[in-house]
Amino acid sequence: MSDAPAVKKKFSEKGLEFIDWLLGRYPNKQAALLPVLRLAEEEFGNIDNDSVMLVAETLELSPGYVWGVLTFYTHYRREGDGKYLLQVCSTLPCALRGCRDIQHRLEEKLGIEAGETTEDGLFTLKKVECLGSCDTAPVVQVNEKYHENLDIEELDKLLETLRG
Ligand code: FES
Image (cartoon, rainbow, N blue to C red; front, side):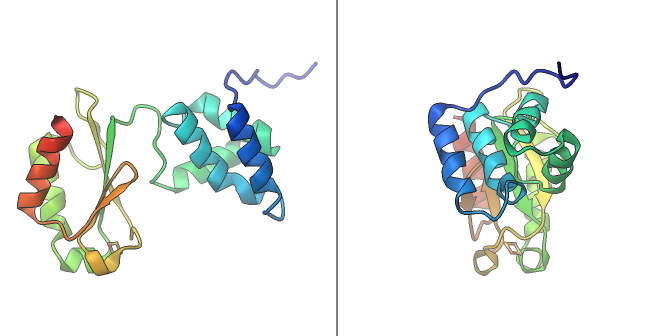
């Protein structure tokens, strides 16, 4: 009998089909890690320790390796992240177009700093590297959606909308 901890989560049937499809398109299981992490995020809402164990087991990787990759990338929703994950691009093109003002405004309005979550669990703020939309700088990604060419006024409206 194995000493490895039991994996508590399971991918859905549709998720397993997607993984099979992926594995037919990548040279090996390790190469499919990023999309499988994304699938776990979509199916479970965020990636916690159980999700890491499931992904590791599914792809026959060590949990430590999966954690290492997960923590290298900022764009996965992690356990404890708020309902809205706000990722503010801080790379040069966005910096030249005011991302620091955006970041400061968010810190001021939310009362948190980058890497923190509001007490009501609504917002997590992260400062990230290039989001790949430099021509529409400055950019803030809210969950899956990009908000581009943002100014302070639009940012305030966005927060109001998200607060509902
Ligand atoms: S520098 Fe901000 S999206 Fe590329």
